[in-house]
Length: 252
Ligand SMILES: [Zn+2]
Image (cartoon, rainbow, N blue to C red):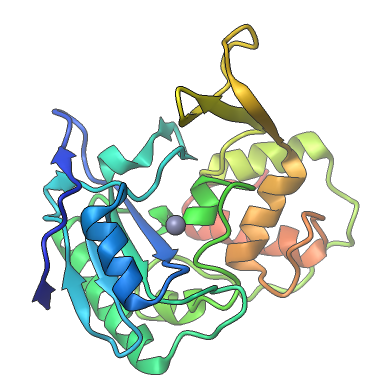
């Protein structure tokens, strides 16, 4: 563990428990990532490089600035209740994560979960899970299966149990929402920051609509990476029902 403190952190709000672990790829090489995460506008608690070296940038009892506009379960702005790990990879949708890096991330996640038992398995999330359409990291090459095998987060290898097209959009919406995914929504920019559009009369520019298809694609990016098209085929549905079951939720 290499201590290289970041300038970017804040006090955890009173009464907010740590319940989410967010995983990212940096999209930048190590030196640029360290510069941005220490002296730029963002930060994370940890950075793991391709050799498996782990940099500690922000104490876990402080808020780091990695999630941005985000939504999971009944919480928005996940920075306050989460721990963030940045993993050096220029694009986890294209490039594999080296074995030594995987082992380091798995070990680090296990330590974090040991310190924070309030982080339920379903709350080990991708940045793309909590910011569908806006973010696509840590990407389809990420090692979710290996993480889950080590007791970190959930995974499903379920195959198709029902033909595509048998589920109504409203039920799909309910099941994704029950697991933690945000509902369809709009976001935009206000005073230079991303914000959710809760009131159409708000003065918000560059508004983007995030639809059900974007949220299905976010689920697939994590749990069905062989197909990230936003179309809930039988295997996507089977895996959604399976992870709901593993999380102790009904898929009725
Ligand atoms: Zn990210």
